[in-house]
Amino acid sequence: MKKFNINDNIYIQINDQGWAHLKNTKTQDYIDNCIISPNYRKIINGDVWYRLQCHQVFSLFPTDVGIKILFNSNIMINDEDLNDVELNKINN
Image (cartoon, rainbow, N blue to C red; front, side, top):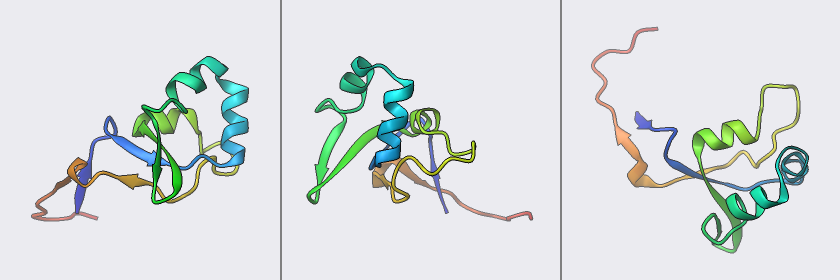
């Protein structure tokens, strides 16, 4: 098993519904400076990905209100952000 801190970054692909949600909930200035700026927008293997802190993704793109998912279901996490966990016993 691996442990991941939600303050670390993940990479997501925002879908059309996600962009519409952002435009309805955030200012264009926020989107320009905190989502699509070169600091956060990355081209990886020819695809556009956005680097955001995991907890920021939870906040920006709610998934518990009966709406469709606002970003593609595959995400990327840097290997160095995953920490090994030694499991002595797992309780159910």
